[in-house]
Length: 242
Ligand SMILES: Nc1ncnc2c1ncn2[C@@H]1O[C@H](COP(=O)(O)OP(=O)(O)OP(=O)(O)O)[C@@H](O)[C@H]1O
Ligand SMILES: [Mg+2]
Image (cartoon, rainbow, N blue to C red; front, side):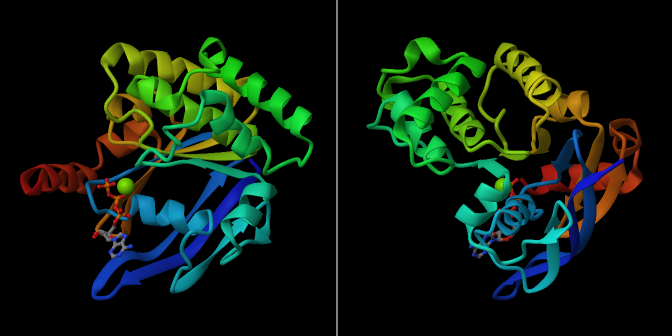
C-alpha cells in the first residue's frame, strides 16, 4: 500500500501540558483511518499540526513523501489536505454557496470556475437546494455539511474530519456514514477522521489509531483496537474523569 501521510515522532507541549508525545503512524492512500481517544488525548492538536495551524516541538509530517512540517495552512491546503473543524467555522451570516466559494477560491482565482466547483460540492453533500439560504437558519447537520462542502471544494486528496458526527441523531449518523463511504470510494479521497461516535468510526475505518494523554497506545483494525486492554482501560478511565 502507498502511504499518503507519515507522522514521525511528533511531540507538542503547551506550557506544562504534554499534548503529544513522540507520535508516529502512517495513513495509506485511499483508506479511511480513524483517530480516537478520550477527551484531551491530543487528537485536535495532531490535526492542527498536520494542517499547519500549529508547529510541533519535535517530529515531522510528510505528505506524499514531502516534508510539510511547519508550512502555513493555506500552502498545506493547496497541496491537498482539506479539513473540517470540531468547533464549526462556518460564516453564519453568509449564504451556503458563499461559504463554500471561500474554499473553492483557494484553488482558483477564476470566480466562475470556483462557483461551478462550489455547486458541485454542494450537490455531493445534498445541500444544492439550500445554496441561497443564510447559514444561521440551518440545522446542525446542514451546517456541518456546509463545512464538509467547503473542505471538498479545496480539492483535497486527504481530508481531516474532526468530530463531524458530534451532535447528530442516529439517523443522521447513518446517513453521514454512507456519504463518507461515497466520498472515499467514488471521489477517491483518503479520509482521516477524529471521532467520539465509535459506531461511525468502527464501522468505516480500515485502521484505527488510539491516543491517550498524548501517546499512541494502539493501532490496528477496528476489531483489534476494540479488544485491546489499554484502549478499554483508557476509555473507562476517561468516562470516570468526564
Ligand atoms: N492552544 C492550547 N493551549 C493550551 N493547551 C492546549 C491548547 N490546545 C490544546 N491544549 C491542551 O492539550 C491537550 C490536548 O487537547 P486536544 O484538544 O488536542 O484534545 P482532543 O483529543 O482533541 O480532545 P477532545 O476529544 O475533547 O476534542 C489538552 O490537555 C488541552 O487542554
Ligand atoms: Mg478535539
